[in-house]
Amino acid sequence: MGKMTVYHGGYTVIQKPKIILGKNTKDFGPGFYCTIIREQAERWARRYDTPVVNTYTVRMDTGLKILEFKEMISFLLAA
Image (cartoon, rainbow, N blue to C red; front, side):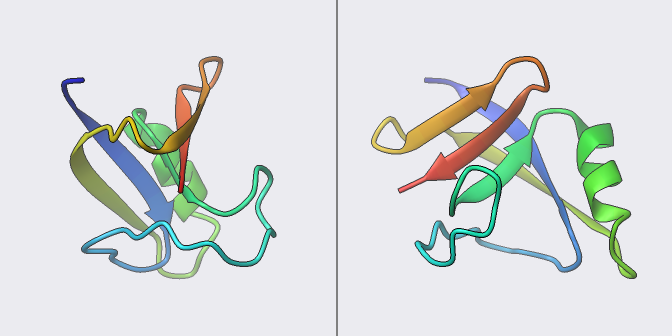
């Protein structure tokens, strides 16, 4: 699978994202939520006092469970 650029909107810089199993408080469970649409990540980040959009160039790991939401072009990466 080729490389792609994805964005994650939040409140802090995340240098190296980790997929950590933990609290199931997100809509689709634990994982690292990202999108290929920068504007969408910017909207997510605006919910915080210090909005941050992280940008990553990734090669998707076929060993991960990937939920792809084609209507929103978003991804959830989970172990």
